[in-house]
Amino acid sequence: MQNAYERSLLLAKKEELNTTAFAMLSEFEFDEGRASMPPRLFVESLNLPGSDLVAAIRWRNQQVWQSQSAIDSKVDMPLFGKLYRDTLDMSSGQSEFLSNFNAEDPHFAFVNTAEFKIEGKFERVTFLVINTKDKYQNELNTFINRLWGWIGVLGVILLGLIALSLRSVFLPMKKIISRIGQIERGEINHITDDYPPELQPLQNGINKLLASEQEQRERYKKSLDDLAHSIKTPLSVILGQDNLTREVRQPVLQIDNIVKRQLKRATINVIGYLPSIDIFPLVQSIVEAMEKIHQDKKLTIHIDMEEPALLSIDQTDFMEIAGNLLDNACKAANKEVIIGYKRADELTHVSFKDDGSGISADEITSITQRGKRLDSYTQGQGLGLALVVDMLDTYGGELDVVSYKTHKDDLIKHPTRGSIFTIKLPHQR
Image 1: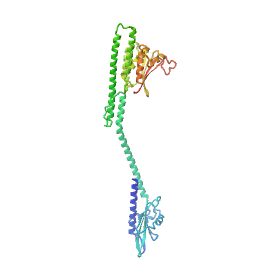
Image 2 (image 1 turned 120 degrees about the vertical axis):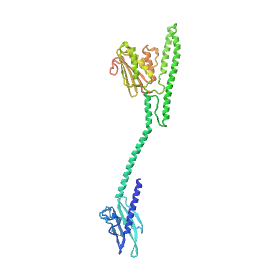
Image 3 (image 1 turned 90 degrees about the vertical axis):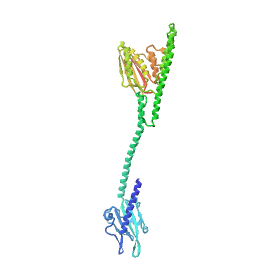
């Protein structure tokens, strides 16, 4: 656009100077063998001293006239001589627009020649018009500035339109991501928003996947429940025999415990996608139950956690784990039990602290050791904690145990009394 506009300006300037030269030619005449021009010309710029338009006439290798505008003109008058010398070979009737006469010179020049009959002979007369490039350059600069200004404005508008377009394109995606986050937190169980046709297959696929996972979990748990009942019935019949000896009863009880434990491990609800749940109300209900069970000890149970307290675990499994740990803490405590909650970068911690006498390092090792036989734990503590360790292992978590009895010499990082059992679970599986 800039080059096209510059060519149009040059063409207009050429036409302007050519018109000026023809106007001079029409007013030029010979009077008694002498070149004659009227005192005031038709082109007004040639009559004004100091003008940016200057004209001259050459005849018989001499300058015979120059315009009044040459007085105090901005035009470099010595340029005439050079232009004359370079145009002496122009034949009669030729004209030339010397726009590139000198790239560094701030002038336009136009030369036109004509032949006049003088004393019976034709003689060539050269008409020269010179114009400064000030107006041309100002017009060109103005156009360039306006051009780039409008290009800048257009660019900003286009960027705005692109931003709006991208926002309209990615807004539904952000909405889907937000809904997936709500599913992770357990706030919703499927996506019900309206989306563009391009994203509806994705929405339907996510909803079908969630429904399929839920249905599979329920079907799996029901099947294992049926299996548990089918196994427990014959075991109950055997244990109900009055003449059952102690040597037979003890292995049957062990088989019954193993079946319960393994079935519980199998039904841990970590198949597929697992959202987070708020455990605060669950902890409250467990605390209320434990206060009734251990009311004789007159314990004070504090819940030190934020609300909501999110944890990636099945509700039933958490009730099982927390119930075991809180029951053990209440049994070991003298006066107080504190339930804590902390959400770190990758793990969520739920702790159960008692003010009892603590447990030894060997007991901690036995509690947290995986794969121990059920009969190697003492009744009332070992079975429950073994089940807790197995369940947390299935969720990718662990049980951390710290006790005063084990760390008497390091009381800054460890409790001054009792023990702390801490559940450590990742945010999401």
